[in-house]
Every structure is written in C-alpha cells, then in structure tokens.
Length: 337
Image 1 (cartoon, rainbow, N blue to C red):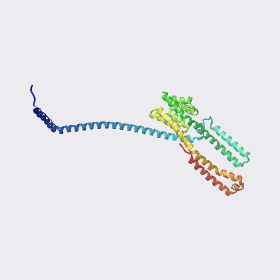
Image 2 (tube, helix red, strand yellow):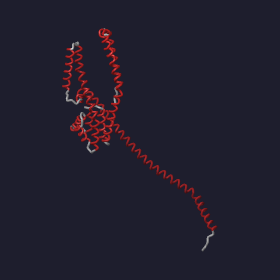
Image 3 (tube, rainbow, N blue to C red):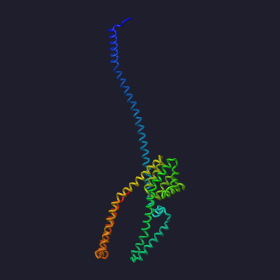
Image 4 (cartoon, rainbow, N blue to C red):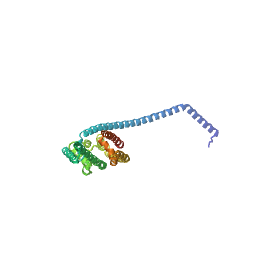
C-alpha cells in the first residue's frame, strides 16, 4: 500500500483553492453582469405582468364608468319625461283627480254635486237671516271650494292607503321573481290577489299591456292615477332593468326597503314636528280666543271694531298680518321627504 504524504495533500488543496480563487477573481465581473441582467429581465417581466393587470383593471373601470354613465343618462331622460308627464297631469286637474279618488264619478256628476251643495248653503244662509251678498258669497264658496277640498281629501286618503300596501306588494313580486315567475306574471299576481288600492292600480297596468303598451310604459302610466314619488321610483326601476338588464328581484327588494325607511322617516319627522304644530295652533287661535273672551266680558269695548270704519281698517290689517304669520309657521313646520 502506498501512503500519501500530508504535506503533498495540503499543497494540492492549497493549489486548488488558489486556482478557484483566481478563476473567481477573473470571472467575478462576468458573473455580476449576468446576475444584474437576470434581475433586470425578471423586473421587466414582472413589470409587463403588472402592466397587463393594470390595463385589465383600467379596462374594467372604464367599462363600469361607461355603464354608470349610461344609467345616469337614462335616469336623467326618465326624470325629464316624468316631469313633463307630471306637468300634464297637473294641468288636467279635476278630471285626473276624479280618477285618482278611485270612485266611479264623472265630470258631470261632480259639477251637479257642486251646484247642489252651493244651493243648499245659499238657502241655509238666507233662512238664517244673513245679508244677500253674504249668502251669495257663502253659496259660491261652497260650490267652488268645498267639493275640491273633499276631492283632495279623498285623493290623499287613497294615496296613504296605497303607500301602506305598496311595499308589501313589492315583497310579493320579489318572492315571485325569485321563484321563477316572469315579471308579467308577478304583476298579474298582484292585480289578482293584492289589497286595494294597489290591486286596482296594478290591474290598470295589466290592462294597459293588453292594449299594446310595454311593461315599462304601463308602469310609467301608473303616475297618471297615482302621482307619487314612490310610484315614480318603481317605474324607473322597471325601465332601467328593461334597458340595461340586471337582477330585478334585488332592485325591487332594495326599493321596498327604501320605501319602508322613507315611511319611517316621515313618521319620525311628523312626531318631531308635533310640538311645533301644537304651538302654531295655539298661537294662531290665541287672538280669536282673547277677542271672544273680551267681547263676552266687555261687549262695548269690542263692538267699536265692527261699527267704526277705523275698526274695520284695524281688523283688515290684523287679518292680513295673521294670515302672513300662519303661512310662515306652516312653512316652518311642514317638511317634504
């Protein structure tokens, strides 16, 4: 067996290390250059990937902005149409309001009832011993003002009943659409099994479809018989869905929640304004109460206001200022939501 000298092995090892160090020293710059090149290439590739992602994200944002802009343009167009239709509805006042009451009344019947009411008030005031001019004025006011006030009262009462039942009808439509029924069948379901006056209004929508109108046009036409912002919201939702597509059940569900929150807000505002309304009623009635008490205790002190021309002028200006104060208080305590 041959033995190796440790000194020879050490020399060989040192020579190998020296040769490797010499090679590394000679090739160091090339290795660093290759590393930098590889790092630069990886950064370029990652930048290209990031640019692709950024471009895709930018395209999605642009597409969403275009869609949002188209929806906004559609909403503006619908609002203009609704304003024009609301203006037309306001012009045909008595005829449209007769339809809005839900009662089977015609214009001729309304005018006959107004004339009969005016004649009755005229006869009652004449039999009570009132002057002829006062009796004629009372009869004219009763014939012109009282029927319109009753008509307005009936319309508002029907609209309140509609607003109470309308969110429930929307919930029924949402469940129907989620179960697989088309929108037309959901409308027919409300028209058949809904509560009044929602049932009558949706039945008119179905009848409008039968004469050739589309569902959005029939829903917009509902504003003629129920001119409410809530109905306007409903028609806009149906029109936008028919033009731009989307999840109709989700849109109607959101509308139902908005209408319920709107109703809660109205009730909250009404409750908060009751104190102001009570104060306004007391302040408005106070002059009449004081004048009545003074007249009962000292009639001569108050009679001069009715017998002297200066008293007539004082009462005239007092009535004008009282009316201005009542109008100001009314505008301060009435809120539109």
